Length: 351
Image (cartoon, rainbow, N blue to C red; front, side):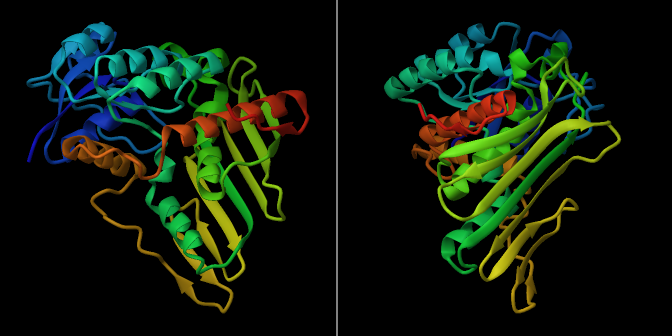
């Protein structure tokens, strides 16, 4: 098996999560790491925290054979990695992504893809000329229960969707990251762009592009006047009711929740806050659908295995996402932020 080499930029929560997943994938090796923190460059992730999953951060990472850099641009220029994986704060995504694509690398970039329309247009321009493969960390599209729900709906077995509710509620991430960047809305985009984006994106993945959004938000609950909680109704121009709620206002003792309930003509598909996944048919039958390979328990595992396989086999990645679909989801969330800020229904303008 040909080895796929990865150069990782950023060793925070998502960077360390990606590192562990690469370690578990046969034929994949992290060969280079860039981080401004000298302790992390030495493999010390003891101060890294997150709101879901994670491993034992008390144990240092095995840095054997890994070239380390303080300057990510230098790493991109020097490494022979096949993939550059970008796991840094959102406003920094575009500069590293563009540099890596111009260097002929394949790029996996964590979400959100970027912070504003200017960065988005720069990325789109470079993607048109790039020969490398590209994917974004919209992991919920690949998350086993969400992916299984989409397949079931697409099959027609449950009939048409009547209503759908999605929730993503996190304990506060105040103090959980470098320079506390999550709490600075101008950097992170608040809970709407950094957290709720996952559900807005999956809604687009499941139902297509909404025509308009009506959103309501709570500001300054844990951040400095950032949008810390958002609730949205999506208008698809038909009679189905689609809503989503997301926020990071709760204290650290609260367990992270992601859940959904999709009511269809013939059955309701429910992913509970406790992790249970059921299809409850109108005739009273209850089923637990097969969600696939247990060796790939999360969307993170599935998306990274798929992308590294595509790079190894020289196959253009097109499962779960395309750059245009990720860009469309960003337009939806930016419209939601506008709606929550103005108190008005906003027509989504797709760029």
